[in-house]
Image (cartoon, rainbow, N blue to C red; front, side, top):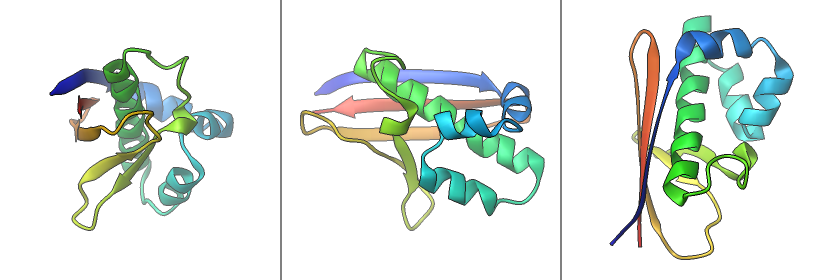
Length: 117
């Protein structure tokens, strides 16, 4: 049974300007996500990465019905499986399956989250 659906879209240019601010990165990305970011090459790829993570976390919060505020960006971590598929690592009170999809274009990053339980 579907418990929640969330979607978020963000302009990558908005993130490109924000990632110069270390405090922004510390607020939005977990320690592991920031370490992964440091290994990426090129400003465009870094902005795309952060925008995708930001959108996925916002989409998850919307699927939960809370929005960011009741949840922190630090409560949600985007990880990749061995094939590169994104997954969310988060503590949930109930056993739920979390499905996430992240996509990018030149200008936008979008993410959708479906909660099933």
